[in-house]
Length: 480
Ligand code: 4AD
Ligand code: MG
Image (tube, rainbow, N blue to C red; front, side):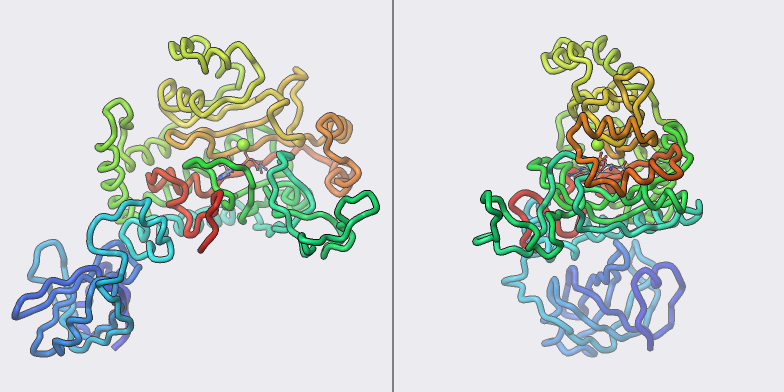
């Protein structure tokens, strides 16, 4: 009598078969004649009903089957009498694998707030919401690999410890083996990194892009999918200090090819979740609707979660330049507000999230690809446009999320690149290996980075990025 998972029990007909189920008790209802245990084993949002007859199952044992306890149950699958389910398990033996003292177990069969569950992130995987979120997250990760594999891209593992700051934003976490209480010093009093493990200063990577570019210069179409780290002190619902990024990099692609790929890719992975995570997404759709209802009328989104996902898959993204976006903001009636005014009078400043939200949620009401940003607000590696003011950048903005993708065509011309690096005080000598790609067999190429948690946030309809990664790293939080 073999172990089955609840997902298999729901998908195939097991009636009449002897099986073993293992999982955690969600709820138990008992009367004199019978106990009903709702069991979940993580394979599905659906709990499976266990029917235990006190004449067969020892009552002391049944008492221990409290919410949170882990059980192994053997018995026969029978057609269910109750409404809403096809089958149930008539228990013949129950073994308690792990008790959960009801006086102490923090998860009770009631609605807990997400804030509370964040404090017990080590247990929250056992709730319906987090079970659904992490199954969807898995499906999206799988879809990412499937998409690129089917397109002939190669998965490159770029280093986590590096000596460069790809984005040049100075928001890196240092990596060192030096005793920081008494570090070895140079004569001038500065720290002597020659005595450090790598004999130089190193940090956790902020992006795999630069190494990705090196790989694309030999393998043509590559992608990375790894953890990235940013010590930006942004305590928002959209920022993590440790997040996962997907970064494709393609030789011979120009800015438009890059936009086409990004749009096609996003639609593919969202559609994959729609087709493969139906039960979980239906559950999350209801959860999101409850949350929407609690909001003020003018803050509610017009579409439900599933409608939003289908809309993105079925409609073209809006493409426009930064300068065109500024014109729209200039002529919007939001312009009267101070923050919008500041922006439109200062061509060249970065868009704030309220500008992005206006464009995506109020003006176009669909995903937007914003291109050709002023060079001053973008990274050194972006290809300079002929106007001398803008670069071939693209940001993709999603409703409810803001920036989900950042990318560009890269500067493939050695002279332009070194000139820009010098202007931006990026050490060209230290980055000789990067510049070598432009010295030898350089070619136009492009790529982008998708923040994986922002994608999961969009697809699950959760409101806070801390709730779509198992163990979030944010300022002041790295306990488990
Ligand atoms: O726009 P970013 O900084 O671009 C890069 O890192 C490029 N090297 C990517 C490339 O062209 N290969 O980051 C890319 C994306 C953002 O659009 C956002 O979705 C996500 O990464 N992101 C974050 N997600 C969570 N927490 C943070 N602190 C994030 N910072 C960026
Ligand atoms: Mg960006």
